[in-house]
Image: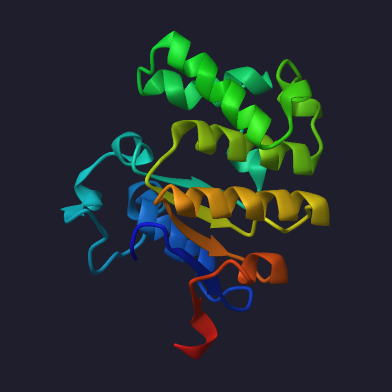
Length: 191
C-alpha cells in the first residue's frame, strides 16, 4: 500500500476481514493467539518486533464494536488516554482532542460519561481517539455498521482528508459511500 491509498477489504461474514486487520496491527498473535506467517512491513520495518503501544503510533485500529475499545469513564479522558500513554505534552494534547472532537462534530460529548452513550456515539468517540493519535495507517473495521447515513458521509469526508495528508487507510465495509472512496478493493471471497 502507498501513502494516500484507501483499500477496502470485502468478504462475507467469517471470511477473515477482521482477522486480517488484527494481524496487520499486531493484535494477532500478541493478544489473540494464532499462527502468523509472513511479515507486516511499515516503511521497511517488521512491526511484529514492536509492542502494540509502539505500533499504535504508526498503525491503529477502530473496532467494529466500540465497547471492546472504550474503557475510560469520560469522553475527553478516553481520547486523552492514548495521547498520555505516548507522552504527548498537555498543550498539544488539548489541541489534538479539540481537533478530533470537532472533526466528528461531537464537541458536546466532551464531558459525557462513555457508559451512557449510544452505539453510534461510542463509535465516534473511539474514532476520535484514533484521529487524535494520527497514525500513519488507519485500520477501520465496518465503520458504517449501525451508523446513520449522515455520519457515514461525514466519515467519508474525513477519509478523503486523511488520504490527502498521505495517510494509508484499510477499511472493511460494504457501504457504497465507503466503496466509492476505494483506490483498491480486495474481495476475500475471490481469493
